Image 1 (tube, rainbow, N blue to C red):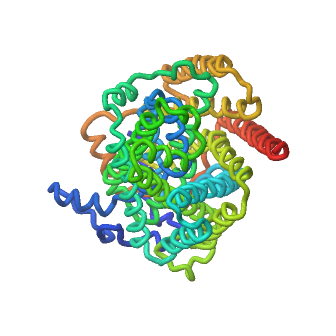
Image 2: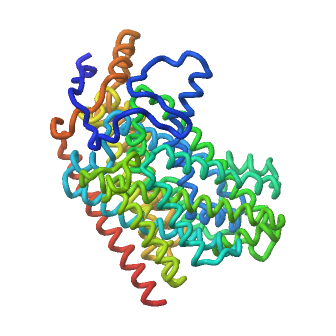
Length: 552
């Protein structure tokens, strides 16, 4: 019972007062202090309509220009053979984003600030700097997607990019959270343009069903190329910016633990939408390019639009290009916003979409600056440089993702931060296994970036050895019942009821009142190893990109 006793916070930990107040969703308002029980299905649906947004936007934003490129490449080069990877990633998506949803609603503090306060200046600075650089490069890839879509649609390149940048900046600068969310949800709705393309292409449903549930590798394909594409699918589906965005957006929307269940439902809807889009892209590109000279010859998303036109008519090509344009705009908006939120968190700036631009100058300057710089790079940069930036984004995202997930897991086991909301044992085991897999994939990606002639057998050896080591390690942790595996399950209706009651009222106290985190010797050693690996991996990637640029 002692493990369930937590102090109720006296004051809120929220950094910006604009993060407190009524929940003003795109489709309605829930007034501050409204904790009434929603008994009817109609009232629950109305509440979900107000809460919906954070999970849906972060997931649809994840189906951005980079995702269009990766999923289309998988379909054009290998048909439906790699579609099974998407279903495997669905639970990983949910677990990761559910943890940041919990952190946001319970703490009221953004992800970057929690890392800074709980793990020190180095990791706080590292998380923000790497997020800033990676997100900046990612936004460039979004404008490359905008450029490709506009080129196919016949829109003049300079004017189209300038207008797109202006729309993205203006949408977030009105001083109204509700207006921004309505804009974002409208983009989420238009992402469903992929469905008519799927219907026009009419790929065989039986083949899609088998490809989703039966893991297979393309016959005759080079193993190393396939493995690297699988890693790219993981990297484009699970990205570091998602963690920072959803946690801060939940806070800015003023969602409290009382509405946690609705936040989870919103997240599940978003995951469903992103999977539908990814499956549709793999399926219709597979059927459109099968048996053509373009099969196995992916170049970019613009060529996919042309291929869809050749196979299914002009309407299919136009809808694919419009969906790419839509995805690039929502991706640029969400990624820029995640960066502005993180910098606002760490520097204690006013950082809320509820504030006008004149009331949060630093926050909006970061947001608009990233968009403007990315648009200029695409307008005035050469194709070789932009291609290198795109490759660098995919590689750096894969290298940095394990560290982001490590800190997410540590924060969700910090009782001073989450109190009765900390992870359970089995969730920690699952998340630990995911982190281990991500570390292995990250190492493979780093090695493949430096040694481009890596063989498929070498990749399988790394995976096999790492998997065996991971099974032994996690088996030892599970049997020992220690090593930071989280709280044990609480049995009995009385204790369960007590825990539920505490969860509804418990919020994290102000950060300055929290006791320092417990850092065991083993945890310090592993964090030191992580730091060394990240420095080495990032340095190798930068050197390789510079070498390629110099050679070209």
